[in-house]
Length: 231
Image 1 (tube, one colour):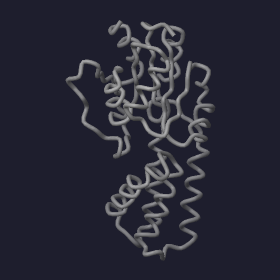
Image 2 (tube, one colour):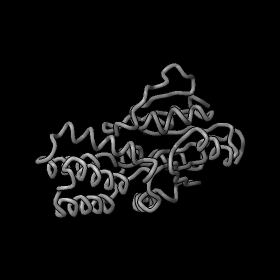
Image 3 (cartoon, helix red, strand yellow):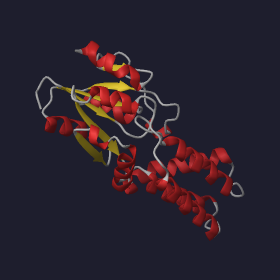
Image 4 (tube, helix red, strand yellow):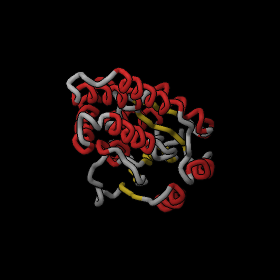
């Protein structure tokens, strides 16, 4: 890798393909199943608290989400929730794990425009098998020069990845300010926010609006022009 060549890293979920919409659909199903025990807003609050608490145990992804739903169902029902409801929650998780990939607009086109001009990476967090499945189904795997599936996206993680690539100019592109943009900037990279209409509450953060290496684009279609301006 040449020191002055860009390394452009992409988040996967809700940056290259849809993801959060399937969590929202499953959560709506969860609220219907538990309606007899807890009202929707309070159930949502309890589930979010369980997810936050369980990240350290289960990590990010569908499996941790399902376990958090089951835990919340048991808690709000005082362990009285029927086994049939638990079975439906497990089935919902399995459906999520089998759901086909739907690329976001511009993902494939932009990656193919940039291929060969820059070094392309995926940096994504979550369950290893599920992320590998989604990448394989996306048809984008051969476009990337490197794939990094990590347990969490932190400043040290970005620093290690970019140092290993041997680049002085790195950029992280993603929909999450908390995971994709802010820690990448803290690691010395450019952070490019591509907002998605649905973003998990635990990924919300304040945008570093005044930072010289922060940029926001409306869609991935704008990324090649941004890179050209920064050159």
